[in-house]
Length: 494
Image (cartoon, rainbow, N blue to C red; front, side):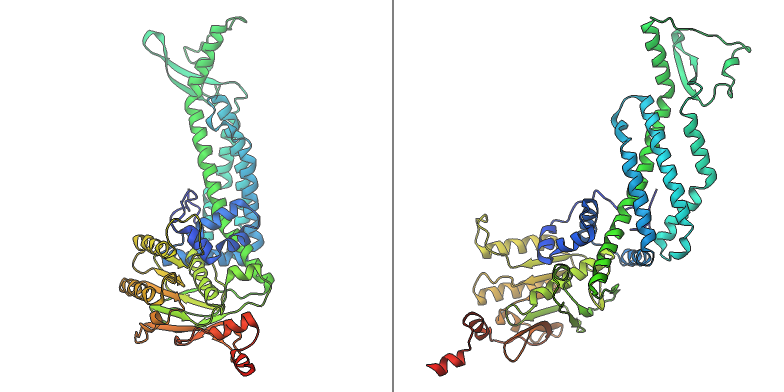
């Protein structure tokens, strides 16, 4: 049975593996801060947040479908949290009786299956009461879920199930019919709900026969036990399978609701900090206003820095002074794309972008003593891994890539890679201090040039604004940062 909260026609796969570049995405975009904010210490919610965001969607319909469900969750937060609590509690209670899963005792399987199914019948009755509020929900996801709950699990249906479970307690004993086969061996064993109802006492010419087992007849007791097992074998198998199916439905519901509970936790965090969020629009251009680094904003209490872009292009080159906010800007974009393609809101006033087949990063790495190859070779190896996996219509974020060699060689290599990626319709964002690289694309009409804003006194606003690359590396700013005075003052004093 499908839940319909994450997809229109299938359930979310909780066993899904992580993409090959998950570690890079987590580290480069600071995603653990987002996962932690969604989980609030709950390992289950943390796992669902990771799996959903790192396995972002490529289908526009699915993204918009989830957005609609999440809007319902925000507008009905207490109800959705109540549903999740009911589901979680029932699963926890059922799992305490789930020890029979690999048990060979058919009687125990039936008894415990009855207990578990009764738990879920009570849960379904609670959900049916909540489903009466379906008019407050507008998304196809919740409407489909509530429709199943109201139409499939009616009062009459649940009463029939309850009656069958009561009959399986065998309060009047176990009634089994069989036929005689070769050598008078019993065949075609069949379990009956009520012996009297099926006339088992008068089955042969209105007569019945009774055999009383002697007290010390161990072999006879074992044979009667075997007859009982053969009679209830099919029933125990059916009960085991039915219980697994019901458990799977509720676990799928918990999983898919878990993503939205994590989203509500994140939403509440932003509301507490009075940060702007928006549901992104899916368009074939990039534009946004008030975009900020979500990961950073979750752990800092300082005023957040926001950025705007309304220039669409295939290649974005970001240059400017060190520590000017370029890497933060890159992270904010990567987070927004991942969150958007997961069906989440993003940290921005407005955000419009297209769906990308893949999201990749190639950030400068610090020295690693465990790496036996040179830093530049390590950069090339990571780039080679990306080339093996990247597809047309992806997006890639470069941060000071190929800076482990001299500027001329690094610019030549990076320039060739960028040209090849653009030919494959791959959108590129690159932070670089290499003027030789940036200047290669000055005449490219599809290139957008941005720079870290710098005050007249050399101070930083940490905002990214439109601006062409400059030859200067702002060495004077670095000198002032270290020695606390300008080069002009040193010249005058000498």
